Image 1: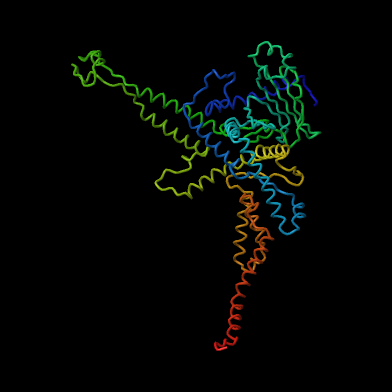
Image 2 (image 1 turned 90 degrees about the horizontal axis):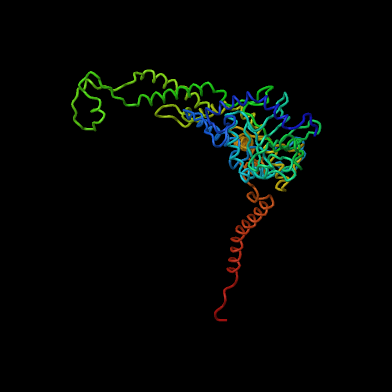
Length: 514
């Protein structure tokens, strides 16, 4: 692999400097929502994290991440479909019923990949990655050959993209103990070998080679010590590293998060909430004032218990009050308006359902759809940068493990389905239902419908395993023949019985005298 710098660490320092402003913005967004997502610089487990005065930011991030997880990785149904090249499909489907067979076979592969997501438990790290995307706008997913998925936050990796947004370089920095390094490296890393509790910097460098169309990988520890057997390559469509961003910004290596778009509202809400909380605490303090020139003694008031009788004048004693009620009302109303705006941005139900005695379900569905449509651009980015690479990586893993057949990429390509409307095969089902409804208006047209092929396509659109569920054409013919024979037998038996009775009546009666 061509190397244009002294070590991976030197390249990391260059890219890390370019990323400083991005990290500063991301840390500010994290501090107002979920501080643990991107802690301050130099943070360790023993240090305390900042605590926001308001919890709307954290609640909104968790809510939106949950909705996105269900949308991007829907349970029990594939979030993608395998499409076949039109010309190839035309050649295959010249035989009657072959299109349904092809669709059924592809649906089996789709369900197998969906089951693999459940087996590897990819939803938990994906949920964490989505929270990072919403807050910081960037996250890196790593899907090795075995062991599930690992998520790297923004301060653990650097990325470089070309002007079209395609990733060209990824550098990951990790802290590792000497015990986890190969023996050949331990001897060279003297500092780590001398102190087993001290960590060393491990850099993973991933670079796309446009000439070979391969991802080239290597690992270095310290200032340039190459890890043995760490160099390798991956095909362009099968990289285990998936760098994600919330929004694609032209000519920028990193994305911007949703929280950054509403950072002004979050800052204002944080300041107002802090003022209201601290002011409320001050207003809740009970303090009695005693006139020093009066007859009432402060000492008696302080020592008196509830119900005691003491000498004094009520006019000498007063309670300290804050005449800030109107000011607090202004702050509270402003904070509530900001909360409503943020609740709509994070798709919280409190903003979707209006405050009224009767709110219809259809009204709520329309509001949800309107808000979901506002995330259409986000779905477009995540479909190309998260879902599609994830499908390709899982299919490559399963092919190596002999769980899937090797599919020709030039003929069969995965096509991602995004959004809550679940187009794809769900859209196919709607078209099939509309088609049969239109045919029902012309009774003569039903005779042209291939019922067996139609039933298979409906089951495939629903994502149902059709194996053994639908009778084959041979079974239907055999059952029809059996039914015909039974009907013929039932129709023939009465005639045979009648002829037998006639014959018996035509015979001469026996003579009792003979």
